[in-house]
Length: 454
Image: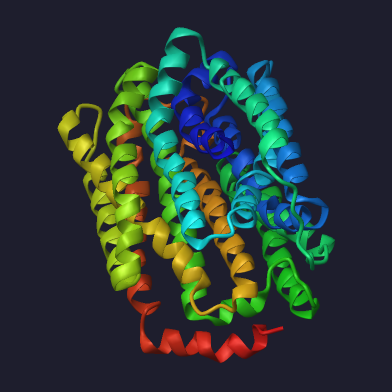
């Protein structure tokens, strides 16, 4: 239930963006912040929430997360302006960061039998596909009939039910050796992500050479340098920089940021294109993007099987072909492109995106000692949310939409530059997929294994 409302929230909100913009008189950059405020906070706190759950109890942390997400959803539904909506989305995200990683820990702690655990994780993962498929339709239908505020109301009864059911059925569990808190690393991660994405979104409005815009990028770069220096000296760092000596691990992080960046841009730009340029209703826009969600839902389990049988190279190559091919088709769109062309592009993108998820997780933990696999997977999850934030920010900047209040018929052509970037991302996924599975890549994992044994 927690994964359902968090996963559906992404696609639901994207479909409602044009309606939110009109009612709250928001600029496009305000709509970008509506998405990115959530993903930024989520990415920043995922690692902290996992260690906090190990320390104070997974059930307790999970229930606090559900309560915050539910309250945040209710507040979003009554937001009087886009600034308040952004703040309330951040409240949602604090709760969301306590839900998904902690839910996986609860499943692992609850099911002792390996086969039962595998089935439970399978059911848990399948919910992502269901929520992605339902999201555009539910969001479109609610926005059309009741209004965009209803997309947040739907989280409230589900959240309350999940809190009660967790109290009744989920046993409490803690880690026998919880990781130490790393407040300095946590602050540096937040500053790094906030200034980088903030610079990309606000750059067109502030002016790229303005002191404010340049200052944001300088602070981001400085935060990264200090973060690496600080984390190398900590015994239990928030982000273990030794992981990045592993070529497969670094490849997984790069692939996650790139693929989820492409997905963030895909959802954001198509919500605006279909409704503002093609003049579709929110429900119609949701219906036309459904092929992408269905393709992802169908392909994701197939990708997992492929990884298990032949490794990660083939799924990553197929993912790159799908994402890059979709981007290539979308570089040709205008205000009158036949809908069948869009459907082909959407199915291709859904296929590519569905192929990429299982290899990312598998590659991230490949060769890591079992005690470190959870931390490695958490960094990969953070990379996914970071990618979405960067993709949405980049999409608005590249199309020039960040600097305007609304988009017109010329927006379709303005998106071409971003779609060429998506073509490049597809090619990059193919290259990284090959490099991460070479003999040299495997040796790089073996070379750091002894450093991580403690």
